[in-house]
Amino acid sequence: MKKTILCIGAGYVGGPTMAVMADNCPDYKVIVVDMNEERINAWNSDELPIYEPGLDEVVKRARNRNLFFSTDIIAGIKEASIIFVSVNTPTKTFGAGAGKAADLQFWEKTARDIIEHSKHDKIVVEKSTLPVRTAEAMRRILQSNTKNLNFDIISNPEFMAEGTAVTDLQTPDRVLIGALETVSGQQAMQRIKDIYLHWVPEEKIKTTNLWSSELSKLVSNAMLAQRISSVNSISALCEKTDANILEVSAAMGMDSRIGAKFLRAGIGFGGSCFKKDILNLVYLCEFYGLPEVAAYWEQVVKINEYQATRFVSKILNNMFNSVASKKIAIFGFAFKADTGDTRESPAITVSKMLLEERATLAIHDPEALKNAKLDLADETGDISYHCDPYKTAEGAHAIVVLTDWKQFQGYDYERIFKSMEKPAFIFDGRNILDHKKLFKLGFNVFPLGQREYSHLTEIEK
Ligand code: NAD
Ligand code: UGA
Image (cartoon, rainbow, N blue to C red):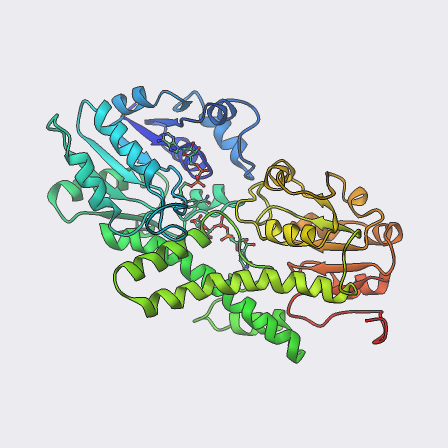
């Protein structure tokens, strides 16, 4: 094989990214390492550590051909000439910048591992999402080596979304590669570009300076999240004015300058990155003395929190101001459909608030039950977890839809209605069900940003 590529960090990004890379580049050996032995064992087994449509096939094709998963970080560093780093970069929970700035301790540790174990020059690629100008700090750390080795730093942020990772990686909208404008930097950039050219058309590969690349990643996430918060804020206004958020989004989205994607109102965005990346952007703006810019972006997170709280208030207000001792069936716990990931899922916030109100929770999700149990492990209260939606809803007063899983649309709601307490409520936090049909079956239906369908009289309300 031509060269060895190493990826440090075998998570939601490192695993799929490198599997697709190895699949498309049979002339490269790709090693993915992680300090988490359980994760590496899972990558080497038939039950991969993450659920991602299409991933099993890709991994099976490449694994042990030119794709290898290992815990031997040192051997990987020694062997590879190109090192992608996709370790986690969570929000700092301590010290300066706590609650906003990125915690770069995992990144710095990998940089120090690279210095210690390298025997020849290397290209180090930032795959993790990082604050703008991180490469400068990394360059200083890496160049502090006393072995006279040269390290080129490249920024190559990842834009895949969970649930569609394989198609996003296979046919990306763009691949972004940032490098220093030095001879060595430009040569390193070309070597990374050569890898992607195996399967990505050249016109989709955008090259920039290092800082533009780092910042573009943060801003892309902030812009996507901002669209969701914008549309969610308008969903509140729709409920006051009898406008319908689906119609408003569709009408806006027909303007080609606005575009139709990312205008789905819901209970708010979750996932490991939007919130942390916006808060990081806010921190950077404050750091660089731009408080007005910081406040603008911080509002995106505030509206996201408002939307989840507003949804819980809607549940309470319509269930006679009390859910204490009432069974609530939660449909969906993952932060979005087609993933088992629950990091920052709005379902966590909603469930905790309902538990505080002393509701009994029955939680159903096709892929996320294991993570849901971990997320709610410290909660006191009556919680059960179910693969079967019908068991989940049996004897419940309300169904609360928190994830946009397609299969929720195909359930037998007539059967479900019959098994529930009356009056039976559905709160559709993702606007995915057929509300009129459910109303005809007897449900009181409360979507987001749309009219409610209620059988209750004004006095009952
Ligand atoms: P993750 O937590 O799933 O995976 C990170 C992995 O790195 C973990 O398995 C951890 O054990 C490992 N790790 C940490 N420090 C290490 C070290 N010193 N040596 C070896 N292994 C180490 O995180 P993720 O979701 O894959 O995200 C990784 C980065 O990619 C983050 O910066 C994130 O913002 C960014 N990103 C994530 C997504 C996504 O969809 N999850 C998409 C684009 C970008
Ligand atoms: C997001 C970005 O879409 C990726 O480009 C980026 O690489 C990634 O973050 C990252 O950096 O981690 P992801 O979080 O996996 O990907 O999933 P999204 O599809 O963006 O959904 C995020 C959240 O927004 C979900 O909770 C989803 O339900 C919600 N959402 C999305 C809406 O509420 N409305 C929409 O119209 C779209």
